[in-house]
View 1 (tube, helix red, strand yellow):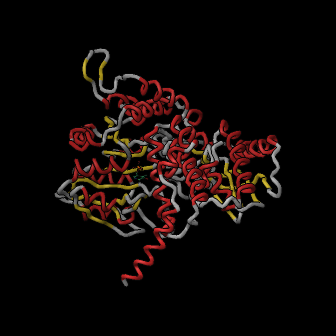
View 2 (cartoon, protein in one colour; view 1 turned 45 degrees about the vertical axis):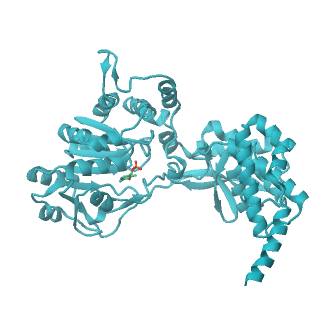
View 3 (cartoon, helix red, strand yellow; view 1 turned 180 degrees about the horizontal axis):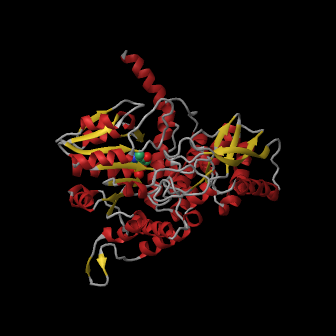
Length: 495
Ligand SMILES: *Cc1c(COP(=O)(O)O)cnc(C)c1O
């Protein structure tokens, strides 16, 4: 056994002897040039990482033990690593998936006038917690409270980081050590592991389940509500639908029960439609305003779903309940910063002025006529023609599709849409090349073709999308045999 190890060690050291020394790579013209662009220290770190990777691959016999080859390989890897290092990690992408509120892609894009306000507030100092009229400390809640009161007809309102934080805060501030009554039909998982029953118990509250998955009646709630009940929680089934033999207690019945038992009804609406109508032609979603009007004690929703604003959680409702949340120490840990507050204020102003379907991209995209989407798909084709590239064998045409709202909202809604369908090329490689491009494009695949759905692509991005598509097609056609490893060949595609 010892001898065997010695022999293996010999082979290994012969392999490793082929490895060029790190200082030789550092002294190369390529590394010197890179040092002028990024710092010397950064180049050194990249070289070290590249060499460690090559050493590991030599050990695994994945690379030939030839000095000349290894030097070339190391320099190539260094260039790719430097390119990647210069790209920010959080990058903007073109969303050609046909999912408007794509949670993995950051949900709602912000409108231009909203961004203008964020830019202004973010550049310098701002009245985040400062009362200009009095020249002294103010309240961050005061920034959007008047707008929320006006839009929602609520006594008071509070903003936290997201809707999950709002639910967490409400349960913690109102129900720790006490009962939260919820229908079994609403013990849902929102996504990303946010499960209503777990949130309730993690706040130290007791979950009291009532009814069944498909049917819960007001009598079920009435039997469960008692002296230990802190709240009746109602959760909007925003990301799925229960159909068939179903029954639910109405909001009015719950409010009446809560009133009689002196227990607040708290509603997690999630999807974030503040007022009706959100956009023409869409099914009616429950709105925060109607919940408040019905007498619900606290209503919570997301800022970056159908509201079309930044990631935030809105809590609106009865003054005494909102104040309890505000006073809880957890509120401080969940408060958003000024970038979010400025985006939220500008978004709410647009909503208050009834301009959401013009000024908020998500609402605009939801209400857009299919012909307008088709015109963008045709404009992408025109870019392909315009660039006059030889895309031999590749077929690109406009195809009718259905887009979705996404973000765990309106699960049953299908939006008529149009896509550019690209076939006659390795779809797996093309989809990957699109993601590796700059701008990166996230598309979807269907039947060995790549579909670029235009519903969530803004007019101003049409040209960039067309160019990115051409670059990706060329890369797949020209670069199929470049032999680069799967993870690293992406980086070449600067554009
Ligand atoms: C989406 C959703 C949440 C979570 O909202 P975030 O803002 O993503 O934290 C909570 N409850 C419901 C009903 C939702 O739909």
